[in-house]
Length: 185
Image (tube, rainbow, N blue to C red; front, top):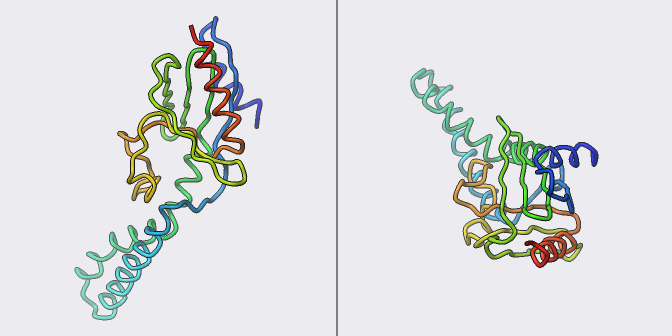
């Protein structure tokens, strides 16, 4: 896995650029702080949609049960599906720190490369847990992202600041970036 991560970032480098660190976000299903609000909401939404659909089916009114299908699907996505989408997205994301920039490569539907110049990097925030894992956010931290870090649909908004999320040793990566900033030409 490390060789794959390394090579994905390596192909983005210019000839004079030096790779200082590469990694990826944590894998698998994950609960986040925003789930404190999303889980009860999704259970209420999904529960009501399933209740509606069951009554509509029993009443033998085709329009009513057809009307309820999208609401049931959205409810199931919010209850369970969003966790799998989040894991799938993280599985296809790679991070890199070079002598010149921060690189985030994502391969969701198509390949997207986000690059942040170390010299003009906006504020950087380290959000670290007691086990040393954490997230580094580049730019202002959106207050709503604390409640719903992946958005209602399981995807981050386009306006949200780029970040290295769910790193195993976030402080180490944070220090690598700070040192690279000091040495940047």
